[in-house]
Image (cartoon, rainbow, N blue to C red; front, side, top):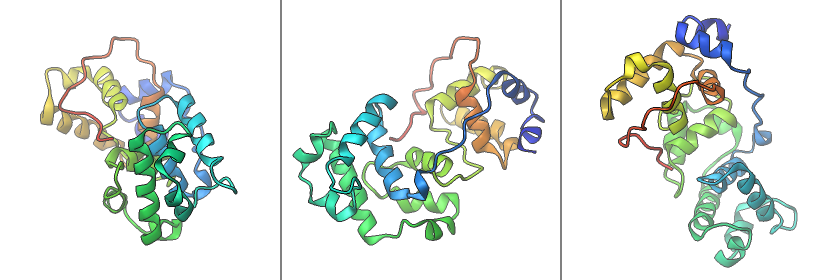
Amino acid sequence: MPLTHLSKDPVFARIIAETPAPKPVYDWDNDLYLALLESIVSQQISTKAADAIFKRLLTLFPDGYPHPNALLAKTTEELRSAGLSFQKARYLQSVAEFALTHRMDRPYVDAMTDEEIVQYLIPIKGVGRWTVEMLLMFVLDRPDVFPVDDLVIRQRMLRAYADQTAGLTGKALYKKLHEIAEPWRPYRTLACRYLWRWKADVPAPVADPALTPED
C-alpha cells in the first residue's frame, strides 16, 4: 500500500524501481534517552567514528549505561577521554539534565504529535529540529516525517525534480520542496528513506546556502 501510494508520483515510481528497499528500522529498544545521546555523538562525524566514540562512552559507566545522574557526575575531561569534543560533552549533559526533569518514556512521548515532540525536545542544548526528526523517523517510527533541512534529501529532490525546482532558491525552493512532498503523505518517512538510498546518475546541483541543517 505505501509503495503503491508513492508510485502515483511517476518520478517517485522511478526512484522506487531503481532503489533497494530501505533496511528495517532499529529502535534502540524504545530508549529515546539513549538514542538522543547517540544522535548527538553522531553529529557531523562519520558513522564509524561515532560508533567507536559511543562505545567508549558507554565503558565509562559500571553497567555500561549512562544514567542521567551518572552522566552528570562525570567531568568534562572524563567525557572527552571517550573522544568527545568539549561541546558535545556539554550537550550530552544537557540531555541528562533534561531527562531528570522531563519524561522521555515511550507511553508519554507516543501520545504527542510529531510537532509536539519537536517542540518538547529542541530546548535541549545541541538538539535542533533535524535531530528530533531523525529520532521521529528511526526511533519513534513515525510514518510521515519530512526532514527538508537534511542536505541529502534536498539534493536528491533537486536531482529528481529538476524541471520543477530549476532556478529556485531560498524560501521559494523550500516551499516547492514541500509542495512536491505533499502527495507522499502519509508516507513521507518511507519516501525520504528511499531518497537517501537512491543513486542518481546526474551531477548534484549546488546546494542552496539559505537551506542548511540546524544541527
